[in-house]
Image 1: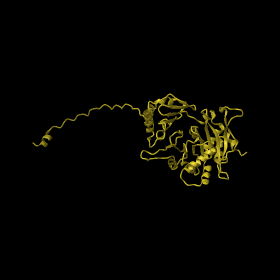
Image 2 (image 1 turned 60 degrees about the horizontal axis):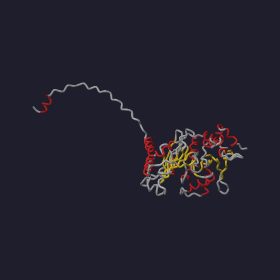
Image 3 (image 1 turned 135 degrees about the vertical axis):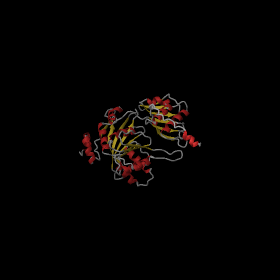
Image 4 (image 1 turned 90 degrees about the vertical axis):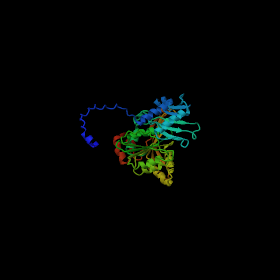
Length: 401
């Protein structure tokens, strides 16, 4: 009998009922940890030597001048601490973890970098050969306290009338420039002013290291980046600004203007992109305009100086000058409007508000930001007249007489 016949002659196996399987047990719930939280835990571990200062809300800046010398700024005053890193290698390990979070690398070819911590605090790193003292780490902490205009008024940084005027400027889409020295509160004030932007606007924010925390629902944050180890991938503030204009923005906010992007910003302000805001380093409103002009000339675009100045004077409506005083306080000292160029092609500014000391007083806390009595240049615009319905306190600034 052939093998096939033998196989066919074997009785078929009896069919059995399928075994009942127990219902699958649900997998134990696993905590989902965001990548940012992992970085935060790791970075805080490496930064433990300065951990108490990172957790202290009264400390605004941490300055590490090598592993053995650490200063802090508390309430505007610098203090040398007893904190230490175990070694230079431990300090370098902390820095590398911070840079890994933002996707940057530091080396002797790229010895200085800006970065940020997961909570938004700004970080600057410098190392040899640029730093002769060795590794330097500066952390400007991100304030968790939610400042608003009412807080600035209560602390004497602004007057109520100045607050209402700045609200009018933002609601009517005037271009604002915040000017001041290092650590004078420019970015903090810009953050507070942004709260007046209408919630239905599409806002593009451009920064070197993200610091601004806008609360509107439609905010697009762009961050510049340097070259990688192969010299590729650089994206400057100017590159980002050019791309932002193709993203249909209602408002463009540049965290700080430092270079050739000034020209692109000025041209955007004068060609339909109203309501833009930025900050820069300058000691007075007049100096701010000259500095903006200088940065625009850094764009390598050949433009007659007279034409550039006319565009600058047309683009900027109001300049807010802030200052940090010796006691650590930060206050608005001037709010000026920009006038057309004079007959000699020079900038003209006019003070609307000035910080003044009452007669007979010498205490800084008594100084008040006072209205100068100057009429607002753009008071006759339809949008301004319409906005005055909700800001009747500004009527004296807008009246012709």
